Length: 349
Image (tube, rainbow, N blue to C red; front, side, top):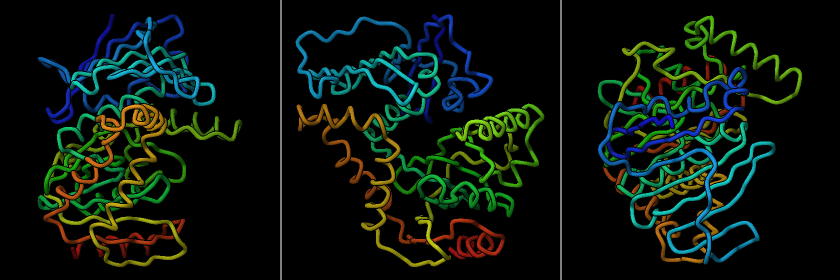
């Protein structure tokens, strides 16, 4: 069976084994490669992965389980369920998360396979990173002169537009969607840009290949016909030169963006920022956070149950030497003047 190996800065490594079925790939023209979310982490070899994901049919090892809410089969160090998101469906089994070596088995339908990296694999990566003291936050980030600037926000608040506007001004892109914190350092998390009509920055539009443009316009047509938006996903390395990308930098400032009516900026304390960051990341954990909560109900002292407590403490340690925290209320639509003001604010930090 085909297998692929991935490494996140050598901190967390994992392997995905795929049992290719007859229906694999039928959604590729619309959604792209099923594992594009993970391709920025591809590696040649690892000795001992932190977890292994097997995709294909499996026989669940669920005898002796307690069943909660009719759907969740739980016993110590084990969970099994069937779940769906509209027409995407999957069967999931996770074991070994308490002992440190996770084994994950997933049997999705063809549409479900396209969403497995985002809905299942990413939370597993975050779980293992946090276990090692590396919290992940939902944010974009740029760097200049070895200093990192983080823009935390929910989707649609403009974190990608802000980061890319600064790249045009001489900054380097660290990450577009998530970043990893390590003490006072920021590490990249190179997931692809999720490009739609409302966040297509000029620097991306100008660098899109013919293939990327065809893919983008195909998704725009799909939106006009169905009313449903599908992002065009392009890895940063495939659309920006290496000179515009950074792998890590020392954390200098964190900006929390909240969509409001007009631009307002104020300094905030670390604890207020952490509350926002925790909520922001919990929203990104759906649906895996459901599985964590079901398991935590039965095993309240488990690693699953204490995950968010550890996450908050890891954030405090990572932000301990930083004192520049800002809450930035931004208009729903950005104009050149707003981007210019934000750019000046960042440059003055």
